[in-house]
Every structure is written in structure tokens, then in C-alpha cells.
Length: 207
Image (tube, rainbow, N blue to C red; front, side):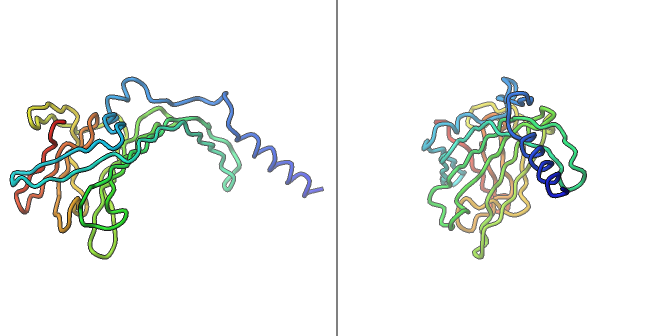
């Protein structure tokens, strides 16, 4: 008899946490899109950065994947109590670094943007670091309202929502790079980066 009740209880939990239209949906709003780099929708387009010695770094979007996801918040381990389940928008952007001389996954930058249950927006930028042994990553993750955003002018273009990112390790878009500062505009993506030690400043060329 206990087995019957246990199976029945698990079945109730399983069907209760399935997706349906009654749950709230945290979708990207029009104001959210002020913090989403939509130019990366153009898959295959090459974005070029040039420094003060005319060296270039090129990246191109490999995918721009926006999905409606479902979060079921049943806590089966602690007390089987249900928090609010919800739908939410999530965007994954993958940027390929071209001709950088590194290996494997160290050729990719990832951007993950999604909505929380409370309706705030989370932006997560992951930058690759290659150290001849393997690939590590750092960057930033922040939830709205976004703080400490700066204004910058790069190649005569005004950017008003720039996050200055100081990676824990160097960002390595090319072999032996020592990029220690990345400029990420919330609305336009990566717009520049610096190698402070070697006085190199890479800036996005307007396409």
C-alpha cells in the first residue's frame, strides 16, 4: 500500500510540474532590448577590431539562439514544496574569433541573456583565456538594473551603456595576447579591448 501511495505521489508531482499556459511568462520587453546586442543576429557577418599598430582581430556570430524556456521550481529533496514555476526568454550568442592561433573552444566568446522569475534581466559574458595547456574563461555576470555603465566614443560612434570588464585572466583573441580590459556595450556588444602592458588599444571598425 505504501508503494501505491508513493507512486501516486510521484505521479502527481510529475504532472503538476509539466508545462502549461497558466504559468507566468517573463519575456523580453522593449526596454530589455536596449541591453541586448541585436546586431549579432546577422550570422556570419565579420566584426573587425584594429589597434594603433594596424593589427586586426576579427569575430563573427556563429549562432543567435532565442528560446522560450520553462523553469519548474519543485523542491523534491528538501520539502516537496512548489515555488512559482514560470516561462522565460533566454538568448545564447556565440561569437567565433577568427585566425587566432588557439585551439578548440578558446576560439569562442559566449553571451547569455535571460529573464529571472522576478522579471529582471541577467547578462553573462564569457571571454576565453588560452594558456597553452587548456581553455579557461572569465568575464562578468550582472543582473538589472545594470550599474556603472559608461559613455564612450569609438571611431566617431557614441556608445552609452559600456561595461568595462577586467577579466580575471587575460582575454586571448590571438596567440600570446594580454588583453586585460574589454569594453562591452550592453546594446551593441564588444566595441573594444586593451592590452595595457603593451599599450595596444583595439577599436571596433564601423561596418
